[in-house]
Image (cartoon, rainbow over all chains, first blue to last red):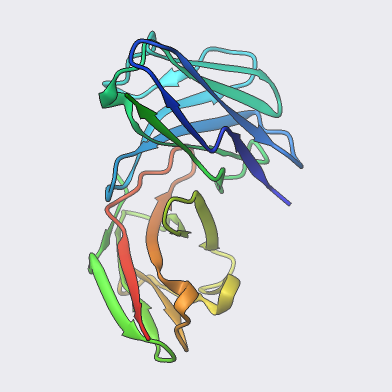
Length: 116
Length: 113
């Protein structure tokens, strides 16, 4: 149980375009999902906390207008990188909790974004 | 604020020998602690977690960790390393009331054939 998927697994796009990444909890309902980014050989940095039915909470330094998060259902959160630029190239990973009182986060397989 | 220190950025062991990845935490009270593993270009997989129910925690793939309050440690061990254990390992704290996980730099485990 507690399986999280992401789609796509990798994407290449041109500079200035927008890219949408989906995060789904497959066998549980997730009221809270989290979005991280990871640069090569670095650790995970939390970008935002996504709450179903409400606005996401962004970490300091993360542009909410650039990284749009929508958590429209209990099994789906999306991250849209708007007007992507090469510096947005990174590995984006989502996670989800399967119970409001549970602190364990279950992670998706990640999405590799390359902006040309 | 809670934090952890992974004492080794890189550990190399020979296949079949024991693995020890060290983690010390800093907190005024006992946190929940997780060990996650990340294989290259993959997401993170939960190895095990400590939530105060038992100090010796057994995880997947033969890994275990012991919470030692007197030493403020939560070291990850495995009796015999396998080539498939080569990955990045993260010791991550979590406290009640703070749903976020804060990742440190991790420990890269290399297995020598």
